[in-house]
Length: 497
Image (tube, rainbow, N blue to C red; front, top):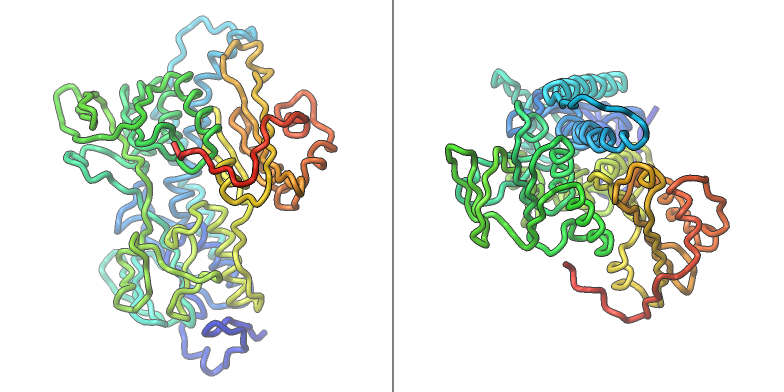
């Protein structure tokens, strides 16, 4: 069956003779979520596909990685396993008021959980390999480098270099953790190492206010670690709704995490008692582990892009158009290496739409509207659509803000002093719900359904007309009747804290 392809920006029928001169119709560099999805779906359209990835290891470097990429091996999946493990600490405490007589001291075995985590990511690495193989994708283990608009070189473990030609090349090499450029930076770890520590620390200092910092602070504190969290702003999670950021900060403190707002690290040094941390305020802390959670950067470093002429921005992100095509028509890029919206499901979407565009004869642009996301703190935060600040910035008319803060039913018996908070942002003129957020138990599970509603353009009246599930926290989203505040058009958002 003939394949329709996007050739030099146009949909057209490739010449079979011209196509035959290439070893592959598509060669993908990087076998993470986006790369594997693009490879599999392209192969399903009938394309001849090759993909290369570095050898498997839980901690990545320039020469090791693994099929499955960051999300599966050293990101979302192992992180969520540790969140589950940490959450049991609070659950055990709460259980006492539910009649569970826990008379003996409860110990936590970090090494056991670590092995379970490693077993799971190894299993998933194998599944990703089988998914690719079963789709007819040929996997090469080694480092990929682009040496021409239609040529890729793969360097294997033994140093052997193999060259392959391809009609299209897709870059899907993701991102790498960034280290803070301070004296003693080599004493700190990144999220890669934090997921594979041999020993659970007793004292940890976390630098950063993003979701990775918040999640690891929550994980370690849930396991009994003393945690100090340092971040540059007044509140953590810059870019999220300010009201919800304050809720998260309150919950972190309530769980026993020591917050240090408007603070960063000036210097690290090794002492007999551990790692000495000196802040920019002159404060001194001592820790067994210091985690740099100061963001991630695109990972195109060793791809030879400059020599080939592929344009990147100041951060190293590969520049692409709305179809994920670079300035070189035969070279494309998806996922974190493009630094558009760095979420695994978004990389999957971009990989899917790439395959549709190039091999499915159906030009498709990724839609970044109403993409839900979650911060797996304990308890978690989840959002979809616009924050209040974003809505005010973009609004042409008035906004209606609905909020609900309540003690979850479970806490009324356990005695835990921790409220769940929900919020809806509504366009006053159209009645459409344009933003939703929640911080509390099960927030990501609840928000996935709310995301469907927003994607369909649901109005506040339709939310109000939906029967709730009782008793549940989720029903609060369909029972918020009273407007908390009305924001008039033209009002500027609050200063980003």
